[in-house]
Figure (cartoon, rainbow, N blue to C red):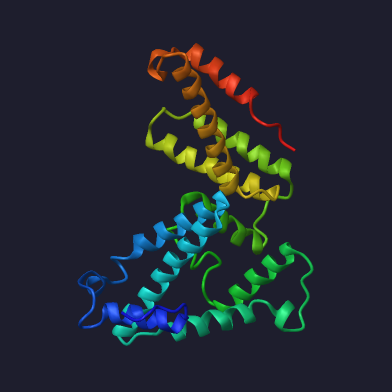
Amino acid sequence: MRPIDGDFDEFVRTIAVLRGPDGCPWDRAQDHMSLRRNMIEEAYEAVSAIEAGDDRELAEELGDVLLQVVLHAQIATDEDRFTIDDVVSGIAEKIRRRHPHVFGDAEAGTPDEVIERWDAIKRDEKAGSGVLHGIPSALPALLWAQKISRRAVGVGFEWESLEAVWDKVHEEIDELKETTPGSPEAADEIGDLLFTVVNLARKQGIDAEEALRATCRKFIARFEDMEAATDAAGRTMSDLDITEMEELWRDAKSREEPRS
C-alpha cells in the first residue's frame, strides 16, 4: 500500500474508493438517513474536545466530522445529485455574501452588528419564507429555542425591557403552580417557562446553552467530590440520608475556586 498524503483531494478519492464497486461493504450500504446520527455524534465529540482544550483530540475529531461531510457528498455524487465541489463552492460563496463588511462596502463594527446583518441577509435570501422557516427542528431544544427567539427579535418581536421578561417568568411560574403535577398541562407550562428563561438569558447577552452546560459540569464536579468524601469515610452514597448529602454538597461547594 502506498503512503497516504494529507491532501484533501486524495481524501475525497479515498472515500470514493470505499463507496466504489470493490470498496467497503459497510460504506457502500450507507445513505444520508443511516448516517444522520453519526453526523450529530461526531459534532458533539468535537465540541467535547474543544471544551477539554485537547488539541490532538480536536484535530482527530474534526477529521471525523470532515469524514461525515465527504461521505455524504460522495453518496450524493453516486446518485448524480451534487458533489463535494458543489459543497465547497456553495459555502465559500455564502460566506462572502454574508460578510459584506469584509468583502464589500458595508460596515459592521461589533459582533452583534455582524449577527444582525447576517440574519438580515439570510432573510433576504429566503424572501417569501416565514421568519422562522429553516430553523432545524433536530437541534437540542435549548439551542432551538435560542434560534427561534433570535429570529423573532430580528423583526421586532421583543420585550421592551429586561424587567418585562422577569414579569413573564413570574407569570409562567404562577401558571405552572396552578397545574396538576405531572399532567400534560404542567408539561406545557414547564415548556413555556423554559422558553421564557431562554429569552431572559438572551436579553442579558448570555448563551443559555453554555450557561446550562457550565452548571452541568459544576454539578458533576460537586457530586464527584461528595462521592470521594463518602468513599474516604468507608461509606457509599446510598448509605447517606438527605441531610448528610446536603452537608457534603455544601462542603464541596466551599472547596470550589472563587469566580474571578
